[in-house]
Length: 454
Image 1 (tube, rainbow, N blue to C red):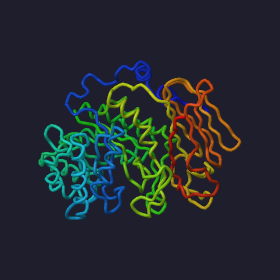
Image 2 (image 1 turned 135 degrees about the vertical axis):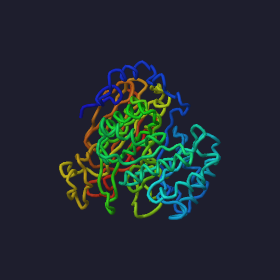
Image 3 (image 1 turned 30 degrees about the vertical axis):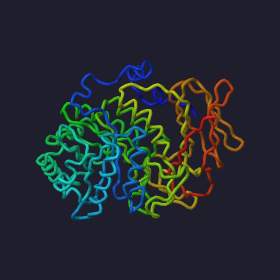
Image 4 (image 1 turned 90 degrees about the vertical axis):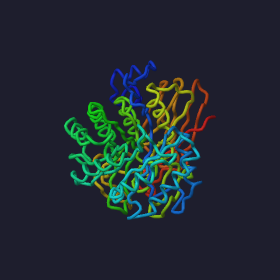
């Protein structure tokens, strides 16, 4: 398959941005940071499902915060589906998380994202987090967000925005526009900006869409919100696939890391204020980037999620883009590295888009076919050669300096990746999980891993 170089070609990157990538000139506009909020990257944290389990304590949360902070993430948006009256465990966990975050001083911040019944308790949420050391503050106000504010009731959404304003919150909600989950164009972007009149900004949750569609939505929302002088928190999502046992069994192909990179570049080019990685730990929709305590698979929080596959490479490959976003210029690549992404079973891609049976499994609903490819994202200081060996098949790609993506057809067995320069090995790795023929325990999820230096 033809190689695509992520940052400069094959991804619809505007010529001006490509030139910036090559020269190292800043992409940040003259008025960026004028409000003093700075460029920040957060991750959407499902308070219902901590990695440490139902009885997670301060030490468990500290470890999660450290995993995120070490990779350039500035804090978590704490998704709460309830609060003190409806489900008091949410409030208890949130306050424990705030105590854990105090160990990072001012280097890791938290804010509540009210979902579902938690939206009925905005007043107690604001009062509970105001004055806490780890609370994210802007202009002296506690930041609060939401998911699907008001549900499908636009009048209730407006009333909740007004309530947040009266409580003195710096409110950056997500609410459903008239287009629902569909791609956002100029008209809907203007609608969103208008509905944010009494809010300080807008959080576009994204996730449920193809990467190209989410990127275009970001590109339309950014100027509309900037014109309205509203903060824009854009999403970046690794991969979305609901549980087969649930009611949301659908998937959106991201071609390994390529789709996530597309969203990162859209956020960078649009000069958005903040980015929120969606998500840190949604085990039910495969959008997690959190390390799971294993470089292969692990059972996390509840057996109903099954054996989750490692997604850590999504997080680690994002570090380059996090630094680019915050600095306003692409950082130099100082180490040769590659990350690989593949499903654990080769499938009939023609059947994948129709929720048809594949082997003894049923594929998720998908608007486009899910791929049966091995995807490799490569970061190079200088030109090098990538060799992918599967059984008796070997694929060789000559790659330029910078960031490239390679995709090859998956074949049963454990793929082996080797990176060479001038005939000398510089990095190599054998995939920890083999590609199977009839084992669908990977549940159409992506498995990820990273190279080791020689």
